[in-house]
Length: 170
Image (cartoon, rainbow, N blue to C red; front, side):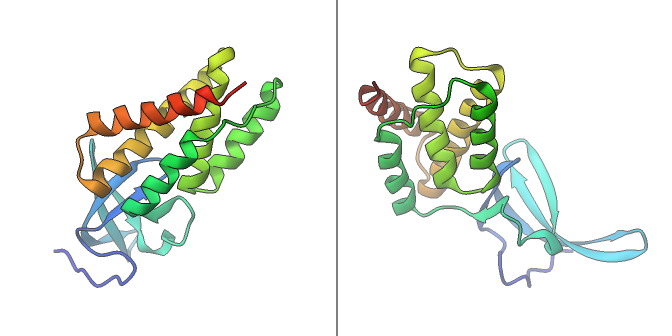
């Protein structure tokens, strides 16, 4: 039985989890673990369902889905000149970790732009390439959920923005 009483998130709302991506809240379920009752959000994602403890919602890896205006503002960030990343992979990995740790879409968008810029002249490491692809997918999925647009259109517009960014890269 679902009990929709949690004020922070409501059934039907979209959220973004840094690991699982964009999901739609289906409700709150009470589960019995180790003899205690605990409430969990039930979140439907593209490939299934996950449950998240209501006690852990104040963490930076879960956030509400961005607004249409935020998505478009961040697309303009994608179009800007990429930051030149360090040649030392340890320095780059530290930058990637720091940008991902914030849980911020803005930081993820900057990271995507900067990694895309690096691959213009240099080969990305496997980790860097996986991160770039994941950031692209998360941004597109969030955009699609936010605006209810076709994912191929979002992919095309994002690629256009990334291409624009590369023209500014020296």
